[in-house]
Image (tube, rainbow, N blue to C red; front, side):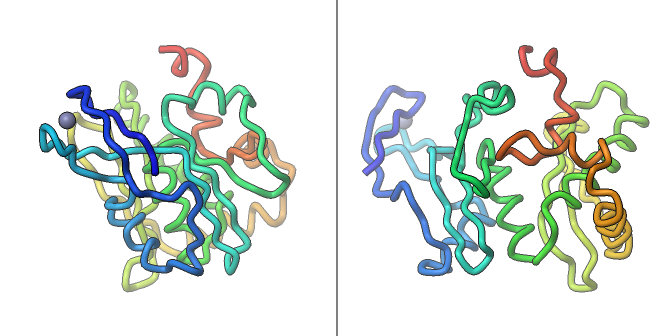
Length: 207
Ligand SMILES: [Zn+2]
């Protein structure tokens, strides 16, 4: 049982395990992707709560073990304050978990996707330098292209960006040819692989 406190101060227990195995419980994959995993309704005030409780997600068939770390611990993660076993990964906040599960489900390369995000966000910043946008990988479209959702470009709006699969393949090839290039190694911060390692400067982090 996990203890949850609603903003209304009601504390209640939730029957959500601390470790999930997606091969044993494949139905959890879609609940992570549709946002219903780790969400609940407060029994007192009826608010819908979207939680990012620390959770270990094991997906043996994808050779992946992912630790979901709450958003409030982002600064610690980005300063290397979170260590996990060799080969295991960390994601910060629920949307990064959903993103990473979607990437693994579609058999895509994590580093290539994060590198693509950098290219897309640099384009977004060209048209709106003030934007602190967040890009989330959603899925492969029926035609096999890659759908990203861009949050925060304009208040409360989500923009959908579709990247042709061949662009992804170009990035993947470049990554294979130059794995030690700064543009790729800078995406890796111990177990935390993310475009945010490049996009979030210390100033943004402490804001
Ligand atoms: Zn409540």
